[in-house]
Image (cartoon, rainbow, N blue to C red; front, side):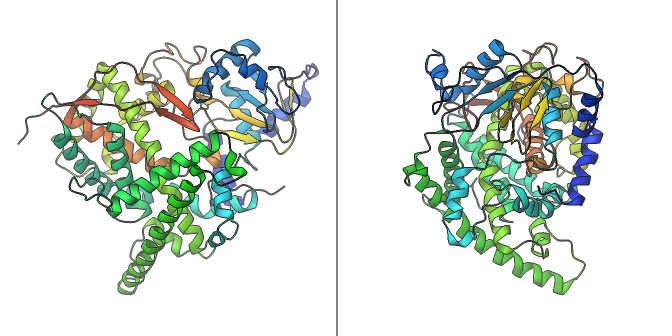
Length: 519
């Protein structure tokens, strides 16, 4: 079995120590020293048949809906307890868990070899293309190839100084987006279009600052049809939608190239062509900059170009994956946060009081110092991730047998760490059905919170590599938007479906009214 390279492993160990997570070794030692270890039991769950697995249980459940699979999982937890075995046809045995202690133990036990199911469609489409040389990138690889990429990419992308160097430009994108909102509003202040699509333009423009090192003009209201910015935005959205459909659907693409699979191929090629051109420009500009001043500070991508342990194709693949990975997922998170603030005006007022205190009249460029003084906004984002989480949780493929309490989880099984249910659990959160950002403030007015109770970006070495970039964008947008506007949502409760991640159903239309007189 491979082991994570030492510098990154040590970093993860320190992080887990900071969160007071127990190591798998310590847990195993405690178990072996106990003279009253309970006998092993079979993991409970619906009846499983050869070939079809638990399919009959799903078919005869009147509420079963693959687009709302979390409802089925909730029933399983209610019927069988906090550790449940279930088997989907054609898939390995899966165990679902939601207790934060169990989540912590599994994440800890798999820390040195965190194997998760690859995005099979993405891996297949790249393995079939000679350009990628049988390498599919950080997102879908495991083992030694994943460790090689992670050791180089993660320190660069997660370094706070590397992230904050984009803040001023992200701030300007956000201010431009507010101008677009003003243009789109009707006489009552409502943006009478699907605001999620507008948020996609904002998130695309923001992530292009990092991935393409440039503005591409997504927010320009006069863009002609078929322009390059529109083409890039469409490719990023199509790329992510195709993966979600391929990974959650019937997977007929494994047998022949379906329409969705072809869409994945096409959108990937559009992004590849664009990123290749951009990286050539970045390298040329970097050489000129270093010739002029060898001590010039370098951007994240320029730093990667200076690394011998990573290839240009590795960087191209990483740049491509940043675009779809940080577009619709980020915009959907923002849509949910705005919705919850609109439905909870007292929380919105607290956000605005904090923003007014930190930003004053708002004329200064947003800095990291400003963001450091916005604990309530950060609490809002955390609480929104608890109430309406972006995903059910991470998955691990066990590389060895593992004892969890009095259950033996076998090598090769999938363990689905359903963090969403931990966030909804009344045993974990007082007033769990209420949106209360205050619970995340330092003094914890609603009680202590387990470190693995809400982990929307996952945890440890396989935590989302774009987490800090996404959080910076989200904090910036919420700060600027709530400083400028009061936000309302007048269209009832939102509905969401789960296709790989949660997504709101249908158009979302917000109303924005000015807080300050316009000059």
